[in-house]
Length: 84
Image (tube, rainbow, N blue to C red; front, top):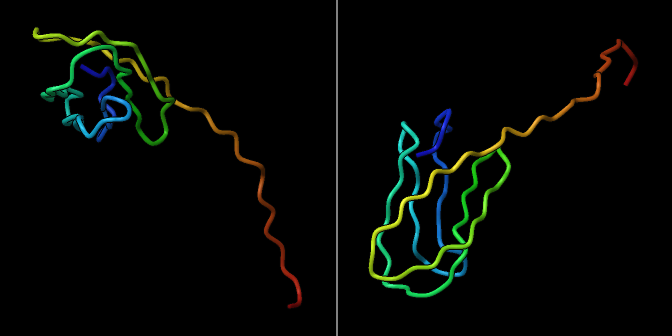
């Protein structure tokens, strides 16, 4: 489950083709045939990325992800009349 539910969070096992995209409520799920230690990676435009080590075996895993919103300060823009 992803809090604040940013749309379209990409969640995947790093260096594999296994993953999913979150729904509008922040839920995600996927199946994998991989076994062993992997990094679970989550990312979304406007949010910081998230990574956690997982040990994958034959049981279901649950992982709550909280992404931090990125704050971007914009410089002031001055528009003035001029000759081109």
